[in-house]
Length: 130
Image (cartoon, rainbow, N blue to C red; front, side):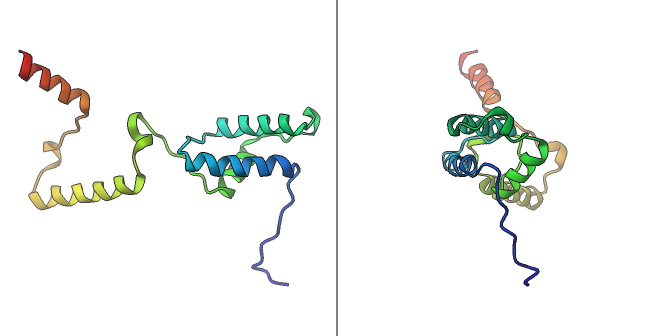
């Protein structure tokens, strides 16, 4: 017996699991934010479609959610504003590039500021219309 072989686990509701697997794959392709709440609501919707009686349904606990996320390699990330549209790998590369420039040019941390489009618009209006 091979100790490294993985054991195939049977799910209680394979029809719902199959629907969830297909939906998650499609949602990831479409860039949908897959929160724990969304995953649980989808499971309930698919259980309704499969006709699973309420007393036979899974208890969608934190443990179930952790197992499901691990199975699909889903990670928790907080995203604010336009963060959902940014490629995480590109962001990491740009952060490293900026840190290199800061070091190379000799900037001190207290000379570095963060500004978004709102600040740029405000400065534009003051400069052009004042």
